[in-house]
Amino acid sequence: MIDDGDLDALLSAPLARVADDGFSVRLANAIARRQAFRERALWTCLALLACAPAPFLPIEDFAQAALRLGPALSGSVALSLAAAALVLTITFERRYRDWDATAL
Image (tube, rainbow, N blue to C red; front, side, top):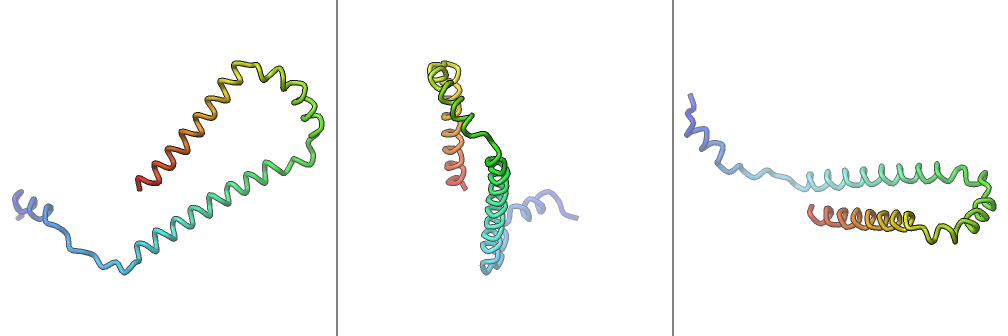
C-alpha cells in the first residue's frame, strides 16, 4: 500500500526525457499547414460565392444611387460613429491577433 508521503514523492519527481527525434515539430507543422489550407479554402469559397452574382447586378444603378446619396451621407453623425467603431474594432482585432501570435 502507498501512503500519502510516497505518493507525493512519486508525483513530484521529475519525469525522464522522452526521445522526440523531431516528430512533434513535424506534426505541429503539418497541423498548422492543414489549418492554414482549410482557412484559405474557406475564404476562397466565400469570396467566390460573394462574387458570383456580380455579373447580374445593376452596377450603373448602384453608382448613380451612391452619387446621389454621397453628399447626404457624408454629413451623417451616425454613419461617422459607425465607421469609427468599425475601424477601431478591426484595429483591435488585428492587434489582438498579433499579440496572440507572439504569445505562443
